[in-house]
Image (cartoon, rainbow, N blue to C red; front, side, top):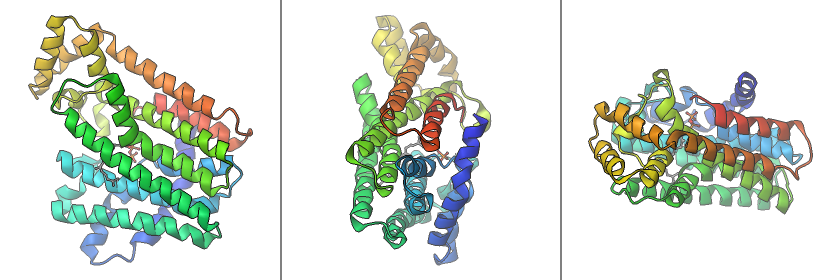
Length: 328
Ligand code: GRG
């Protein structure tokens, strides 16, 4: 676990340099401060690391992957700013959310700026002597991911008003909301590294399964994690979110527990957490979510089988385990 965190840090500095270069000339100062606030707060830098490793895994050069890596992190950071506005969340990455410091209009603008900067940055990949077709293909992958993220977020919002959400609906939603950008990272890295079609497909599939496992783990951490990461344990239950645990329990529960769980999830009160947890545990929902995340981790690793052996491939394997074991 520790060495995976070291691996994520390895590229963090170079990616931050690219991001800094993209943002440090912004004016006025308020827009620059609001746009750089979450960047300075850190984050795991999972997507940039995946992009760089995918590029390396197909024999590409690290330096040429850095602008696309920064671009992906800019998109991710932008989506966090807008997500916090939509959810009216107070904190992010252990800091006050952008809209809590600068207000909603400036936070929207900061997000929009990062979004535009993401495109400016990936286009500059062409300055690193990467053939135009590869730059366009990587750009296409990013644009496609952004559309999917919006679709995923819209589905997530629709799920707030219904309990008629199947496991298939949930998997489709999390793939779009979270998996699409993670899979865009490995796909863009492969493209920039000059991968063959089958290598691009392998790394795209890896990212897709990893992204699904990542979001299931996120939902699992919400129920079992520790409060020190800045999110109260069980907040998804209080919000009545249709996580895989809730969907599974509702599907398996007897009519009495089924109706009671719905009652609890619509109360939007912290006092429901222990009883809701009891129902989830009674129907093995937590173990079910673990198993589903694990299946996706296995699938991610299997996707890499045909890639030549390399340190980068090994690291991608380790990252898959990290996603399953992470606590924050
Ligand atoms: C992309 C065009 C476009 C619009 C965005 C607001 C919105 C529309 C979508 C919400 C997407 C979202 C925030 C999904 C959650 C993804 C997720 C699991 C975030 C947490 O990622 P980590 O754990 O965070 O990698 P750090 O802080 O480590 O970077």
